[in-house]
Image 1 (tube, rainbow, N blue to C red):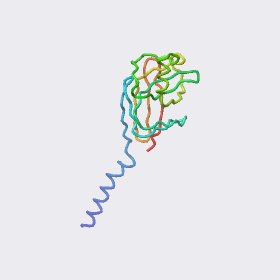
Image 2: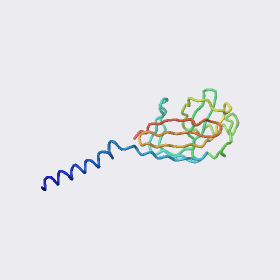
Image 3: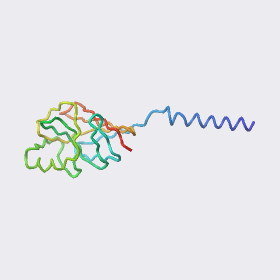
Image 4: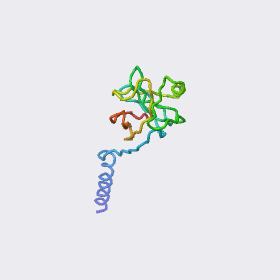
Length: 152
């Protein structure tokens, strides 16, 4: 009888643990960032498609459009640009700002922004553990999505 009880307890423990490890849905954390709000990365990110590696630290995120295309820009967190303000990179202020851009991730979409400009944008970040999805929103872009793999 004690053997049966021990076997039953062991089966119950396995039945409870297995769905949590294998079958359960992945937890997904969603966070919304206002335009210009600092976004901190806890692990290195690798942009799917382009292979650009983003180091773990804090950034302000914006969109840069130049003659080579449209890019997701990771800027120095000390950059203060009012939401919705378009910064022309050809001006003296834009030249200073250009030196504070750490990473450019190519976007496969057309954005309604003038060439040679930068604008900070609101975004939604969905963290699924090994994958991070950044959804850019706002009046000038139709919910652009950039997927990163998390390098642990």
